[in-house]
Length: 293
Image 1: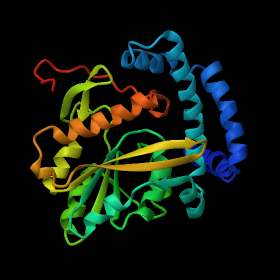
Image 2 (image 1 turned 135 degrees about the vertical axis):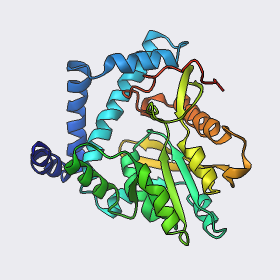
Image 3 (image 1 turned 90 degrees about the vertical axis):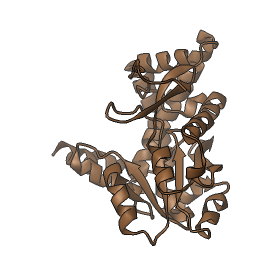
């Protein structure tokens, strides 16, 4: 019941406000969340220190402050996503080279698209369905709150993207084998204990990387493309697509996982403030029997 009240009395009315008011709210949230409440600052600071051991305290604090400003923008932009028009969304999320993806439809190949929680992935979800000539599916983990899960998935999928759980995706493709899809993975979250992890160095730390992207791509002989969302200015983003391979089955074990992780790492090193540092990315330690690649 609480989530219904929150949605209809708070989230939905706020989402209908113009961007200039929303960014005023973002400025206020920055003061409350970062300066006053210090939301997850210990997690963020430790993640930054471990990732950039050569940076000074001043440099770490600067990245931290910029991150919280972006996080607050991301919060109000995500709320706006519930009511944003297709035209407004497309104006704020541009594709630099979507033809790189669409060209493979002529070859009759599925595409696996992989990226991280960088830039604004909510706005990307709303616009990608219109940009692709493929049918598009994004994999997600359902929320425990069924009401909010329904509202969020409907918001993300209102302009063409289909949201499916990881359990449902294989059946979907097997049942509709005559159709071609772009399957979108966010592969930078910490794997669950039940998931097979690929262990490698990422941002100067031993990191378990989700292996599902590579496994899935090989099973469907897919093209694999890395997508990164650059923040051009406040409220405006551009997506760059880069080819990892044209046939996942022709790659060695670990190549796809290593490559998309290194691509994300390179982006983070250049502009670290736009990655989701508040996530407890390194909460698991490498098991003694797990190889570090």
